Image (tube, rainbow, N blue to C red; front, side):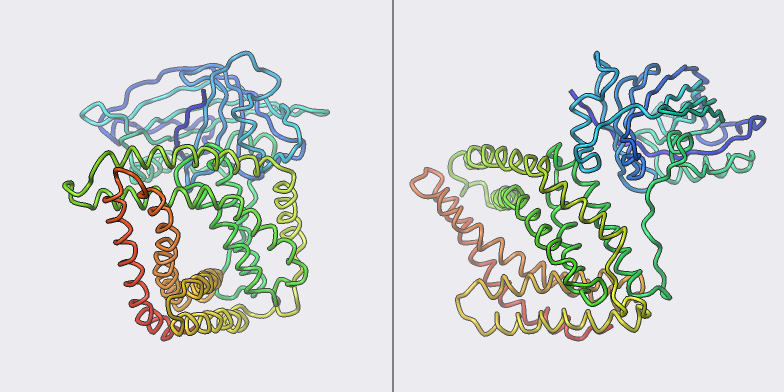
Length: 490
């Protein structure tokens, strides 16, 4: 069975003659050194797709955490490590792990690409209560590439990993002490990247002098990374993963639609259709997740005396099988060729983007006009919604337009600064308000179904009434938020 931990660490280059500083000066207590000999075999595709995505997959023997390890990006200095016991597998990674990297392999095989042997000395930094703050390890590494030709290299490095009771300020403190001893941050994020010479694909940096094309492409790079990072989390059925993966698809789709005069719109229509398909495949799982949480929160907010019967159990009986099937269907979509073809299309777009002449213009000159088109679209939708009576569909369309404006402003934020940020926030306020309304629209029929002919019907009726009240409130609040949004310009 796979287990998962999040590790936060930094790596440092250490000259062979450098001495570690006195670690007791950092936290007061430093135990060690303990010594280990570690042997690891790393697996990847022939063209290093995992390494380029910042993912590592290895089989390691030795130490107190030996086994199969899959490391996935999880933010600055952090990675999520999924572990499986060694077992009998040697030549191929276990399916529990290889299935989690299909967004990268897409049917290509995994094979050994490097062997790394490490002689490790480890110190543990603790506080006065004996709680682990950090581990500092001094590694002497010998590595060999595998394949048609091999190279062997060796080096020394220092790793500092946070313990359960440590924080990032401690990492900064340790780094300062190491620097004073002549030990500085490593240019490689992992041992593997150092031996095979492949670094993680970087997201382009954007500034106020960037072109319109550079700004839009950087945003698309970010969303590709977000989509791929959420893929294994969806497969593992982790909290909020489906939502975050859908957000990445929608952000990318909105950017391609809103900035079609920069990244040629005719060239991306099929891709945006496929992004819509993927969001739809994940939609049922997300809708069920939202409804269950909504009903549970509403139930907890009611006075205990009006909660008649075991309503919580009724919710579980209703949602559990539906959510299980929705998760199974989502994973089936992620295992299909259509999904892999979509990912390939994104890669192709970013490798050779179909930029227009407008893309070479300065971002500050080109982008505001395109964002204003998204604003005009929202204005028309809100006007239609305010003019409609007892009709939820115009409000739903206004919500989608607010989302497009929000994401359009978000694209421009690195180049246009605070005005884009404020516009994005105002658009998000409108989207959130109308999202509450739409969630209420979706929730009411389900509450009717749950309460009809059920001993818990009274309580579900109360929840239904609160949904109606909330919908009326969102409709009343919309004009105020819209006016606030109308005051913001790029």
